Amino acid sequence: MVFRQIIHDDLGCASYLIGDEKAALAAVVDPRLEIQDYLEIADYSGVSIVAILETHTHADHLSGHGQLAAATGAPIYIHGEADPAFAHLPIADGFELELGQVVVRALHTPGHRPEHTSFLLIDRHRGPEPWAVLTGDTLFVNDVARPDLAIEKRAGARAIHRSLREKLLPLPDGCEVWPAHLGGSMCGGPAIDMKISSTIGFERSHNAALAIADAETFVEHATSGLGPQPPNFASIVALNRGPLLDEPGAPTALDSVELERALTAGALVVDTRGDRDFDDGHIPAAVCIPAGTPGFGTKLAWLAEPGQALVFAGVGDREARRAARLAASVGLLERRSYLGGGIDSWIGEGRPLERVERLPVSELAKRAAESDMQLLDVRERGEWGLGHIPGSLFHPWHELDELPAGLDPERPVAVLCASGERAATAASLLQRLGVARVTHVTEGGVPSWGELGNPIEITADPTGAPSS
Image (tube, rainbow, N blue to C red):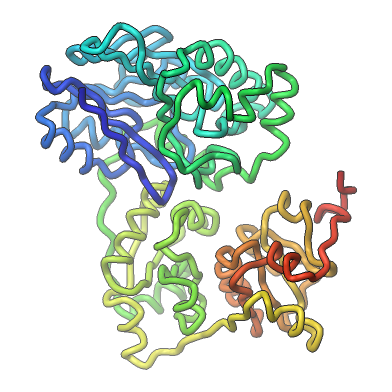
């Protein structure tokens, strides 16, 4: 049997190539936008890709099913309730695809989306029982999928509970679990693990969500801690429903003069270097989103306006072109370009730079006490509710399209999150909004502040509602 898991590290997505080497037949499940890996693995394994299977219409990333179908001639299979606007073969619960002695059996598991389907894998060389299940966006390692990306969240949670109880948990303990997402994906919750696989028995024993037998208790568990929805999930769903996408075009190289013109015309300049390099010197009005850390595409999708031109400026051309590919993977397909030669070309021409002060969290209390510095917490609302610095302002980093209420742009602002990573992006956004004295708090954030013995309060959420 051929079985390969292909991981998209930036998005936390997993796809699969499965097949029978003797029969020289294979299928790809949940292909990502870049399809070259599937073609190379198939060629190396001596198999032909004869089917493309989708667990559901994805909401966090673009599928490569159209490109893969064009490259291989393979049909696309998806549950009939997806109703896509492209040529496909609709499947239902119990559908079986035979790839020699390998059988893929559809298991309809709605909840994350109504059409969601898991796939049981049977290798007749080994026996008639399923040895693995591709759980898609229903069951993850140590977590379950979020229920709010297609229907009302409580209805989605009830459907996930039924799918888990009636379809997945009855499988044998030894049945392997191979999910469509790992830690870092926005389709799961904070408990989702980076581990690539598990078993039904281990998840039944250790996954807290699976221990909740009562449906309404499960609904409360699944909906109470939901993070913000992926920023452009509706547009990604629309793109994945069809018509099928062609291969995204390559980004265009710009020189410094062309970048300045693009910026004047409203382009978003994205500095893809690490935050330390950004703080030390960057193109004025650029936004800091390091391409070397997971979640680049998702973070960019929060900030880019629909149809906005994007210019990537990094260490060099290779890094910038990679950033453009990651942008395409989250549906940002048009008007992508990059600064040829990277930031060094800008600096070499003597063009202006802006800087952001860096301050370790261990020095923040002393600085704040000695100045009129404002503290801006840019974490999520749920994190704020668990504890925040007394007197600090709150505004999630991805909502900084205008100055936060109560913030004085004439006074210095220290920006902090939980680690310093989101604060780097937020600091660059404040600078774009005209705040002249911005400090990026590094080497930790609010939790570290508390661990250093500084005060933390739990009084109310940022909207003024009483804390529970």
